[in-house]
Length: 507
Image (cartoon, rainbow, N blue to C red):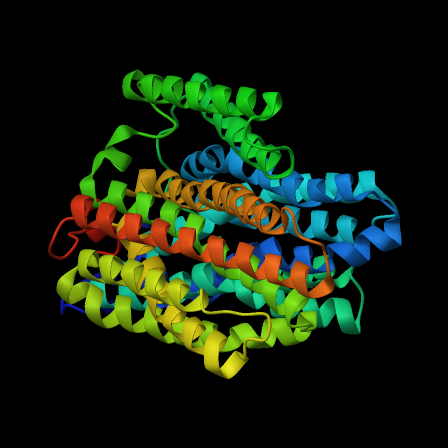
């Protein structure tokens, strides 16, 4: 009894009675690859949505649970701290203990923490649930991306899969604004957390049915010094940037945590370059295209907050949009982003490689942000905001999907988890920096605009608009810097897959 596996390039794997476990695993993965993509996409969408869907609900949660505005930031910061500081460890755990096992544990843990947060009776319960959410998210996100990395090796199919994933990474935050607005306005702020149960249950059932456990690999000792240095470094950096957002860049606590983060990051690199079994092997990040892709994801995350954060403020505070209307306003951008990401990775990436698309996408995104600098107190959506959003969708779709694809291409299966975790870490740290940096610049602009003037509702609105324009301009500068960095670091031509990746599906 035998069955033939027809692969896209014409090669095949014939499974005979008594086939090896590796052949059976390859056959299983190939036959169910699109179902695996659906499962991974649902899980990733849950994680990405959670970054913004909860933010929209925060004012309502604050009113219901009666906690202070100073405490409110910890609902966001608590999640970011645990998520950002544990990502590298989560990626390595997936490599060591199996991607399916870690993926399911992350899903279930995230769902339970979401249920606890939704049922919170006070601030301590809510913030604790958010911290636990972040910890399980740090297991889930790298496992999800590494499942995608090890499932799709054919360049064309890999492009389609990463087009979907990149669209979620780039547009999920904006979709979260829409979902958060609907849930908060028509149900309750608690549903911004309960909604995760819907995603988690669907992904867990799919994961149990369609995923297979990895082939057994030799277990090596965990790099404890690397874990400590890396985790504390990421924690310190995320906390430092979050503290700068509320207390300023020259605040003593801000400076201490940023200094500790940078110092330990240097220590971490030294440890990893010498460790026999490093948490993050230097071979993963020192490849020019992969390293350049991590930087591209990082800088895009920094600049992207100029879109979601300040444009949301502008539409709600200045134009008077409701949360639901604000979310709907972002939908055209999401639609263009999804289509662009799909075309960029499925059609263009296998032919020309990531460099032309990422560089062009960065410049297009910068142009879209410059279009947003035309806003005024009475700016119209069709004439000013919509054209900029359409351009931004085109640019971000050309950046995220190809960058994430290139950042995980060519790694051996045993490094897939940590390579995926590095992508998520770059995005998380970039988002923290973007929030703190752009908020500081915007606040300084608004303050300077109001000096020696008599405050009035119109003047305050104009000050807000000037602050948003400043944020958009600096975001555009960041994307131009990303284009220059990608031009220098990324290599021309198509990205070659490693022999280990090719062998995974039997090429």
